[in-house]
Amino acid sequence: MEQTNILVVDDEKEIADLLELYLVSDGFRALKAYDAHTGLRMMKEEKIDLVLLDIMMPQIDGLEMCRRIREENNVPVIMVSAKTQDLDKIVGLTTGADDYVTKPFNPLELMARVKSQLRRYRDLNPAREQKKEAQVIELRNLIINRETHQVFVDGESIKLTPIEFDILHLLASNPGKVFSTDEIFEQVWHEKVYEANNTVMVHIRRLRGKMKDDSRTDKIITTVWGVGYKIDK
View 1: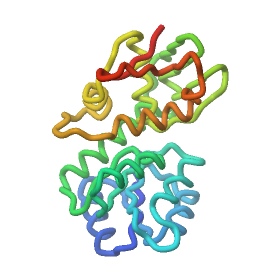
View 2: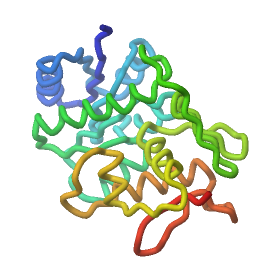
View 3: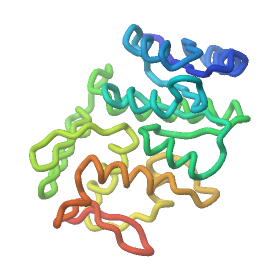
View 4: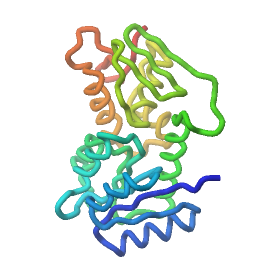
């Protein structure tokens, strides 16, 4: 079986070495970069399956690196940062990160999140070894192909991260049904919600932006105020 490559980008060598230790002990291959320039170069030179990315780095910070990754790649990105405020998390997710873990982190929790993101990414990757029968959803001006991870709005292809795709697929698979943010989180992240957070709202805001939903009269994702979100038939 092909080895899974995880890129660790952190200017603190001790943290990068610690992450490498956890990853290798779980059977992953860890590649390290101590600045964003090196990390971006390694993204081009190596087949990277997931990125663990610090925010506070000199020259190019983690937020800008994440933006640059998203210009070309939908590989899962997990921010690992000492910034703990909700606003910092929202900004990180808005730039394209799939998840956000604060330092100091619980190694078991971090590895669980890494594996969860990898499962989602591989399930949506058309190059996986065992392909499932194509699942295509068509709702009005929206087409979603589960197997190829393609989404078309008004005939135009849009590029989504695995998390964004899963949220859209969940809503489109259940037309007319209203999902609360907690329900979306539990079904997409496969984790229980223990405290209120803005993670789902940030991802939906970014998803709507990519679909140009805010400027549409016939919005694809409808907000049911005080309840949640839905996609109508």
